[in-house]
Amino acid sequence: YKYWHSLLAQHSSMCVDAAGVKKGAQVKQAICSGADSQLFEVGLLSTGVRVKSKSSGHTLAVKLGALAGSDGGAVVLAGATSGSEQRW
Image 1 (cartoon, one colour):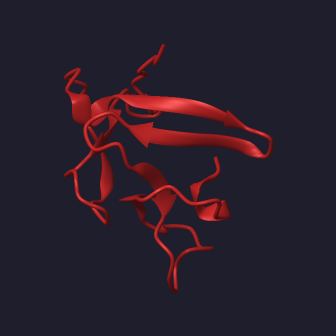
Image 2 (cartoon, one colour):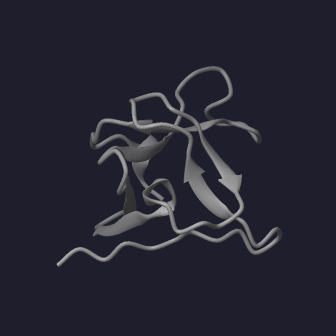
């Protein structure tokens, strides 16, 4: 069975929301609506968890590039890999 979860930011009481369904779509916080774009499956890995979007089937990942290891690095939807940018 798959269990879909809303990811709620404690500081704002807003939900994580995928702003599209294509790879590279940014993830943002938005008022919680229960939409599929705000529902995620959390899968346990030996080194953390993988978070998959219900609306797209893609995985949450830190966007690789200049800011990937910095405060303010973007989170986007990506195809599942074994990369550390997709482990939470």
